[in-house]
Length: 508
Image (cartoon, rainbow, N blue to C red; front, top):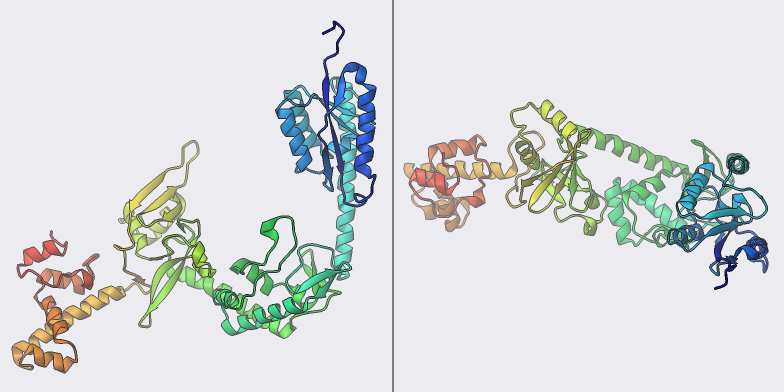
């Protein structure tokens, strides 16, 4: 190598255009910017400047942020030390934000990368050069913000006149000549949704009904797959649809609704009926959740991250409290965790695990609210995550728990569960049958079976409960038998009362 050989300087050309307008032309703004940059690099050949073959072109991307694919590729190549100089046509092509430019300069300085705007000569290595750059950026940012304000004012004026100014096209409409026009097939689906809601009066039931009818969200032609729609409704989008006044032929702006240019799909009377039901359900649901006194409301989650909300189940006309995964509420059973429904007795497991059993109900509620971040239910345990204090790490506790061991549902009125009542009934009936046999009211078990219209084997099996130890019988009648249920009492009980206590797990 000769003594006067110049070290090559790798130059990356970055170009940007804010809108799609003109991109279809054979020679557009991006080409013009690149041509000017290449000419400038050629003029610096004596210093070893060489343009990189990679193109960093961002077409139709705003300079107000750094979320641009070509810019991200450029920054990645800078981190990989593949670039020595970044060349742009003007400073505002790189960014229109002072804060963003400060971040870019920090990246450039860390990798010793220079920056050049070919139509704005300044040297960023001097204080005067940096001042000049900041002044130019300030005006670029001012221009962007001024343009933004003009656009907002135009949108506000258009909306007040009922014009469609863009956004997510609602189900039931298409866009034609920048206006909302009714889509015949989709509009019928919207009418069906409102009518079925008036019939069912429940979002959860409506979700399942729409699933059976194959009514889905609006299908869209977008680059991002998750925004293409055409999927089953969930409670959030469905609730939004039911309160969207666009279907009344109105247009929204700044919290107010104005008469729109487009035609209505839903009759105002139907819309108002749906709104009345939705409001009533919201208020009633809030009252029910408050009235349940659910200790773990807002804290309990299944193992797939779904919130478990307080609910109830009906058995013989009696309501029993429980917690149900929101995935079940939304009709998405496949998205629920392994345990999607738990009885309210799970609260006792948490109270005992946190050693709060000696506190009053109010104190327990406050303690759980202040200490517990969330509780995750799994088939084997409850994972209790505690709130972290300043300067300390977050902790979690693991409480053994199994749905098989916690089958009792707690009654909403605080009385005994259905399983307790069943056991009590069986014990009382056994003693009544035994008295009938002792007094001679019935002469045999066979006669007793005929009188009760039960199988003789069932009668013999039930009579064993009349021979339970007195303290065990008393505990059952008072609801103090713990997890003991009728199904857990063996068919053959020892006559010795101490042995009974051991077998039933009630030994003292």
